[in-house]
Picture 1: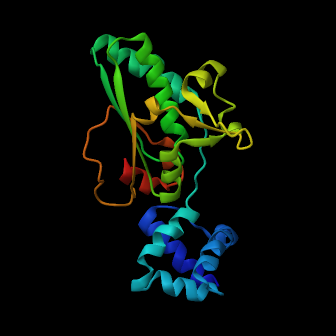
Picture 2 (picture 1 turned 180 degrees about the vertical axis):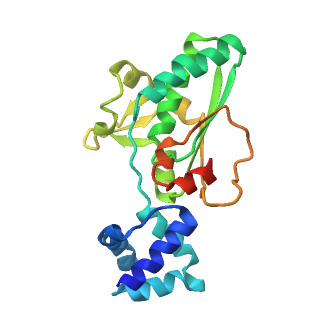
Length: 230
């Protein structure tokens, strides 16, 4: 019902910054169907009551998993990575003699951005002695964080990666029927993941970072939320 939709959309926006206007009514209904089936609810009214009850606190995490947008790709918007390599890393290394870089992929989704960063940094380190790095990936969805940590992707997801980089950084599954790859352990060891909600007043990341990739999460927020997060 519109009443149930409004209650959920207000809650999702106020607590997670995800915009849910009326035009997303059908989308929200469709995405939540799997949660109704998992919990054996036969109508949305019962589900909504459960979400807002004391028993439904854990369900909120599952609800956000299916509601959040997890669009991502390897080398998505490649000009970002060109700028990172050619300007940011080069100037920091040559002018400031910086050797260690701490990077935060703020809306990491299923990890493609994290491992793209790892490839770029690893390539840079090969050409510049003493360079090392670590990358933190955060997201609001526990499902995509699990996938990111596993670092297993279908072959079609890595088509965009140049062949010479595929050979260096990807391991093909021994089971040819799976048609999947996994990121090499050397890159995986440079990464870590944790769940984070940008609507929280404080963030549970205690470190300072040299570089933060956040554009592709900010685009889903309205202007006021963007300013608050920044």
